[in-house]
Image (cartoon, rainbow, N blue to C red):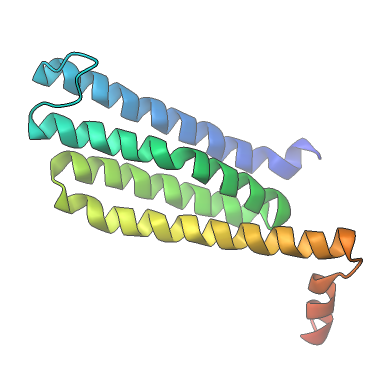
Amino acid sequence: MSEEAVVALAAVTVLGVLQQAYFSLQVIYARRKYSVSPPATAGPPEFERIFRAQANCSEYFPIFIAVLWTSGVFFSQGLSSVCGLLYLYGRLQYFHGYSESAQRRLAPLYFSARVLWVLVGFSLLGVFFSFCRVYLKVDLLRGLGSALGLV
């Protein structure tokens, strides 16, 4: 696989890692601001919201990376990368919204969940079509393109 085949996915991945680092730094700053020393995770509601926002984003990050790459390799690097950027934007909005109030986390949470499900769908389709082509010797995409008059 060439660099061109995955460079956009790699760029979104690095951006995601930087975002995770940013969220972690926000927890460190909040610990100092609200005097919550590790390993404690309880403190003022302002601290707990920042801590939970970071933890929630971290919990979903491995799922995001897995479906980003699976979708990008087996379905479409371009579409997957755009979805990846949308997902990261949604998580940033989620983090900042949750930091301000629990209610403000909801719209960005639903947005990023929808984008994640789109990536899951792209991954499933890409793996299914590739499996059929490689192991069953049936190129469903070519057949679909022919049936629709696209090929």
